Image (cartoon, rainbow, N blue to C red):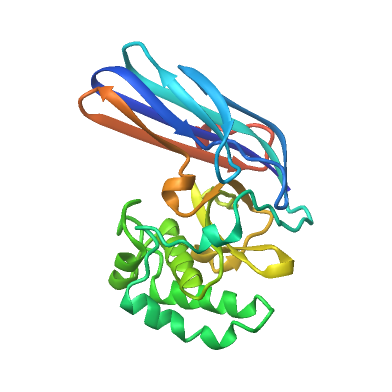
Length: 271
């Protein structure tokens, strides 16, 4: 499947900003079942590309003159659904056993996870998918119920969350069981265009089979409708845009994501 993607981010400020520095993880790479056919990032500032510690293609954005808005447009075409196993390990696997503030398992999460201890010697990934479905049943998708700063344990306790919460909970469970797992940010294509935003899922290490990717929010392994951008220990490592500024007063952020199979983005979708 060839997917055309346009990701627009716009920041506006009530007062002038004197200086902005951001890190952008908005560049997909070849591998893990995808091939980048074309890609570009347009910004009203200076970009410096680098590869971060997790192997993500990233950019530092610097705007060092007064400004009252920032426009970031990432767009291109990615071929998906390729038959490729993913064994990419820029960092040692034990790194992905490390719990973070967003993935720390509390007593309730550990108790939930312990029921899967008996399956640790099972080399198939089926029980890992069973755990995914159990999480989604326990924590159904509820938009607006959490924020990107909500820890896994809190989302699990309140019984509702979105894609980053599902990924964090799954990571907490895997790491509690001693299985390396990592957070993935990216895009999801839907026929009806119902998900016009970034998406998140999880990679779990399956030994000789490499990384197995599970979209917990949709209860399925990833397939040709997913495009990955970045990986990390949690959302903070892999989020599309992060940074700091000096000045600016109140900030407003608007984000729009278009993912389709057509060669042109329709005006109606943009609106």
